[in-house]
Amino acid sequence: MSGTPRAPSPAELRDPFVRRELTRAAVWLGLAGAIALVVLLVQPLLIIFAGLVFAALLDGGVRLLGRVLPIGRGWRLLIVVLLTVVFLLGTFYLTGVQVAEQFAQLRSTLESQAGKLAGWLGRQGLMPGASDVSGIARQALGSVGRITAWVGTAFGALTTMFMILVIGLFVAIDPGTYRRGMEWLVPRRHRAEFATVTGRMGQTLRRLLAGRLVGMVAEGVLTGIALRIGGVPMAMILGILTGLLAFIPNIGAFISGALMIAVGFSAGTEVGYWAIGTYVIVQGFDGYVLLPIVAKKTVDLPPALTLGAQILASALFGILGLALADPMTAMIKSALERSSEREGERDGSGEPVEQR
Image (cartoon, rainbow, N blue to C red; front, side, top):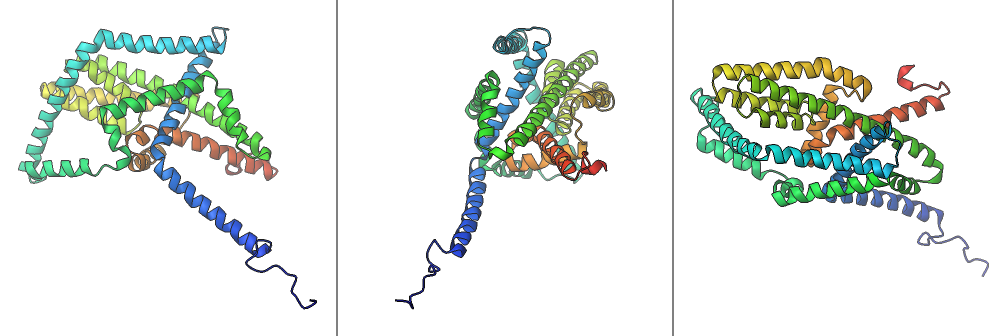
C-alpha cells in the first residue's frame, strides 16, 4: 500500500491547520461568551466592586490608626468598625426624629416648588401642560433599564447595601488572602507586574477615598452652618445631603445646589438669595481652595474626565455606576500610568513615554 497517503486528513485534529483554526475559534467564542457573561452579571459585579471600595475605605482607616496605635491589624479594624457604627447610630439617635420630619417637609417643599416652576414655564410657552409633564415623567421612569430597576425598591437597596458591607468587611479582615488568590489566577511570568499594578491601584483608591471624605465633611458642615445662619429651613438635612452628594463630584454638587436653592426660595426671596450665595461660596471654596490642596495629597482627576466617566457609567450601569465612576476612573488611570512607566523601561529610558 505504498500509494496510501500518510498525511493527516483536513478533518483530523492532527492537522496543524485545523488545530490552529480551532484555537482561534475557541478564543473568539470565549471572548464573546465572557462579554455576554459580564453584561448579564453587571449588577453583581458592581456590588462586588462597591464592596472592594468599602474595604479600601476600612483599610485606609486601619492604616491611619496604625500610625498611632501599635497593635494588631484585627484590633485596629475592630476599632474602626466600632467607631463607624457608634457614629452612625449616635447621629441617627440624636437627629433621627428631626431628620425624618425634615425629609417629609423637604419632599413637600420640592413638589410645591417644582409645580410653581412648571406653571411659570408653561405660561411662558417653554413647558408642556401639566398632563403632558406627568406623561413625560412616567415615560422617563418607565425607561429605566432592567439592570437597575430593582435597586429602586427599599428591599433591593437594603440588600445591596448589606452585601456591600459584608464583602467589604470580609476583604478588609484579611486582604492578603484575596490578593494572593487573584495573583494565583495570573500566569506566573506576569504575577510580579500584576502585584505592582494592583498595589498601586489600591493605594490610589485609598487616597481618593480619603480626599473624598475630607471634602464631604467640609461641604456638609459648612453648608449646614451657613444655611442655619441665613435662616434657610431644613438646614441640617440639607447639610447632610450636601455632604453625602459630595461623594459624586460635579453632579452631586449640582443636585445639592438645586435642593438648597429651591428650599431657600420657599421661605422667601431674601432667604433664596442667601441659599444661592451659600452654594456659590461653599462650592468656590471647595473647588479653588480645598480641592487643590486635597488633590496634591491624594488623586488629581481632571474635571472633564470625571464628568465624562460619570455620564458613561450612569448610562450603562445606573445609579450604582454613577456612584462608582470616580473609583473606577482613578484605578484605570493608575493602571495606565504604570503601563506607561513599563513602556518607558522597555524603551531603555527609565521614564514614562509621555514625559520624554
